[in-house]
Structure formats: structure tokens, C-alpha cells
Length: 450
Image (cartoon, rainbow, N blue to C red):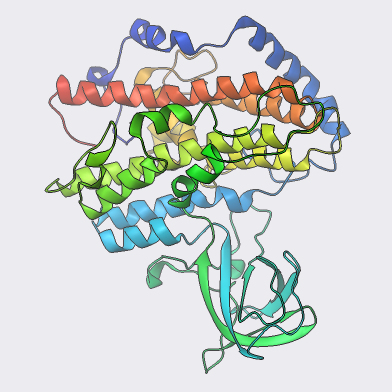
């Protein structure tokens, strides 16, 4: 599901068929009323939470925490697709496994002194000079006890949708010509870098990596979607924690925790490794390059990222503290992360994908997919009966994002579960539309173009 392609009459499904296909996914009247009341309450709610809600908007959504770095994962998707356009499987694999644009880090092996002198606490300040010549402060990625030989720190990321080039440290698995290093730690003629942590100056050899990867969204599934065990608060009387009901159908179908990663890896390497799946196995041995390319780019965005968005929504509910307005920063942050991963950074301030059928310019993640398919199926606009005006799916999902955020910040945790379930239903619609679209292209039009 999901590629480009212009909208033609032969590719449309009639309005009645679309409505019939999507009918089971419509929200109950009660939830419509709830979300409507939430929308009316948002101005007052945002006034009460003015301190928290001070970040750059994600389209119409106002996050209460900084998630610009999370949204940058779509830059990895874009770089991956660029590599795939030239069938550079090696570079594509590096981007998939090593990242580059999201959660940039430096892994430093110490030289002088050769070990950590004073304990370095996780998230404590680490200062250094960048390639651009700026003195900036990062954060220790973990706790490093005295005697440790390595220190990893995260680079600061601006509260902007587009990171200024002078502060970018985009390396990871990117080819050298696609790297942006002005914001990376400076390196001297001997290949050493200098930083200060806990009042001590260190020199070492630093390697810049992407701490968040498209691959990791799937390989972490067993731990964060199947085995997680959050501690329930005293007032929690509903189910929280793993295994997540939204993840289990996929795990039970494929029989593998990281099913998405295995499929993408098989496509990148041209292997038949997924034939051992319980269901849904496929072989890419001898497959045409275009088939491997399409499976890779659709798998990363619409399997890896899709499932992780849902995971963040689930995590927000797990973190929610009932009846405590000031206790739910972590919960709301997880919700913000889900919105960032759903949308990405390339959508800009207005959502470029809603104009994509006219401009040919789309984002790379799930928000963009919804707009692509809405143009094909005439399910755009607030009424879902147009080819323009933004996908109705996105209108509905962002309304639900707002509602869920309000309940979380107010500590009304029980009310978030129905909202999550509706979001997941809407997120499934573009996948179903894509399945219908490509089945029609191949089965009726005999057109195998992506």
C-alpha cells in the first residue's frame, strides 16, 4: 500500500464502494460527541497548560514536549528512498540499520585520560566545540562510572521543524556526500576530539551515529510491545502493559516479533529468509530490483513506523497517572512522540502532502500516505467526498490526537483507550485503500508500476 502515481478515473473505486469498505471503521456517535466537546474545551485547556504547550506545532497539534528530533526520522526515510532510486542496496542498508538524522550521538573512546575520572550521570551536561566553531552542550547518553573507557553523548536538537545546517550532525549510515557535519564535535589534526564532562576535560576518538533508526522500530518490538511490564498505579483498574492488543494480531499472524524488520531486510538483501514465517512469508530471490525497492520503502514507512506509532500511543496510556494533572509529562511526551512519528518533519507548517496531488510533493510517512490515497479514492476534505482538502483520515486522527492529549494531561487515563482504538482504525484505512488500489492496477489494469 502507498506509492505515488497520478489520480486517474480507471484507478478510482466508486464512492459507494469506498464508503462500504470504510464503514466498519467509523467512530461511534458517542465518541464523536466526546471529541467535539474536547475541541470546544481545548482553548481553556491550553490556557491552563500554557507552560507545557510551548513547543513548535506539528500541523494543528500543539505538543507539550520537544519532539522535533523524533519527527526527523522521516529524513532517514527520504535518504533511504534516494539510495533505493539508484538501487544502491549497500547504502540503503546502512541508512536502515544505522540511521543518521534522528537522535544524533557521538560515541567516544577515551584517549587522555584513558578512563573516566569522575562518575558521569545520565543526561548530565557534556560541552564541546563543533566543526562550525560553536560551543554547545549535549547530554550523556547513559551513566558512566569512573574507570569507563567510552562515553556516548547526544547532540542538542533545535526546537525547529528544520534544523539549522550549522547545528546539524547527520552522519550515521549516510554516504559521505549526504552527511551534514557542522554541528558535530570538532576533530583535530590527529583525529581526536575534546569534551568536558563532570568538570573533567577528555580527548578521544569519536564516531557520530544515529541513535534512532527505522530498523530499531521493529527490532525493539519484543521488548516494548510484547514483554513490557509497567507498574500500575494504585487507582488503575484497567489493563495496561504488554502484550499490546494492537500488536498481537501481527505477531500471531507472522509468528515473529520483528516481522517488519525481517521482511525489509529480505527485500534489501534479495533473500528468502521470511519463508519460515507462520504466515505471510515471501522470497525476494531473483525478484526484480523495482519489487525489492518498493517492498523496502513501503515496509519501513508502513510497517516499521506504523506499528511504532501505535506503540507510543500505548506507552502514553501505560505512563498515565490517574487523577494527577501535574504528573503526566512522560505520558503526554509519549503521545507527542506518536504524533511526530506519524507526521514527520517534511510536512512543514501546513502539511505539504494535502496539496501533493497538485504539486507532486509529498512527505514520507503515514500522514503523507493518507493524503495520497485520499486523492485516489476521493476521500479527502472534512466530509471525505473530495480529491483535495487533506485526507479525512488525517482530519479525524488529528482531532483524536488533541482529545487524547487533553485527557492525558488532566490525568483522566481511562478515557484515552477508546481514542487510541479509533486512531488505529483510521490509520488502517490508507493501508486498505492501498491494497485495493494496487490489486486493481495489477488485476484489472494489468499495470505493475509502483
